[in-house]
Length: 232
Image 1 (cartoon, rainbow, N blue to C red):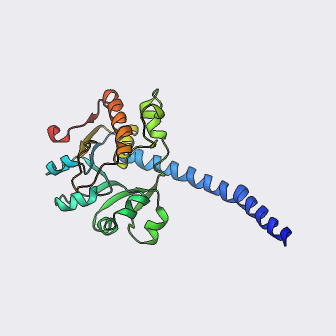
Image 2: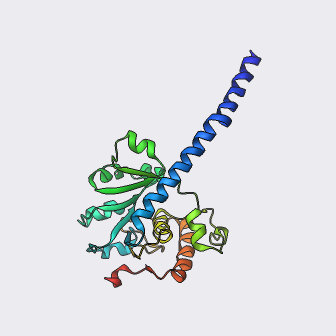
Image 3: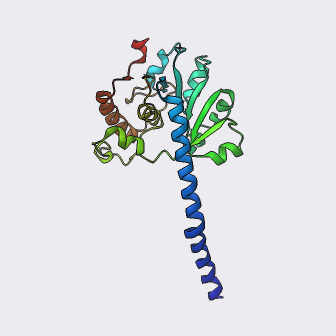
């Protein structure tokens, strides 16, 4: 009996070490390569408008035709409520964000999205939420962040926060900066303590790393325009 029990454990270890782990490493490498290729082709040399849902989003009344639209989470709901019917070029939403915003799945189905970036490919396909091109990102890897703030280290911009990664909105900004967008405009991106357009609170832990990141890249990046409403 004991021999059979330990044999099962040994078989499981073998399966994890020599079969599943190499397969997962291969899949992650493939996902990373595909994400890099798609985002580079999408972003390089383009004008990007990143739309958030912070309080100032109430002032968003129109979207320039020559900008690609990037948004995340309830950014889609904002566009619907304001009757801004432009297609979304890149939408970002994590498994967690989708789980706490119960109406978001139906909103995604109503919106024309070119690329959807997520950490939950399986459930999105299984639930038939989106049938277009899905891109995988774990969202906790800091490759883009590290490259953009170097030589400063990530631990130097987290303050007292336990979060070592930025919010979804600032993740979109990292993509735009890293893959060399021609111009980047931000709308509804306040990063302050006010409730957002929908009355939601901004996650305090994200606020620290997000704001410190913004301070660094604002000084380094000539193509970043923080006040969209004064730019057009």
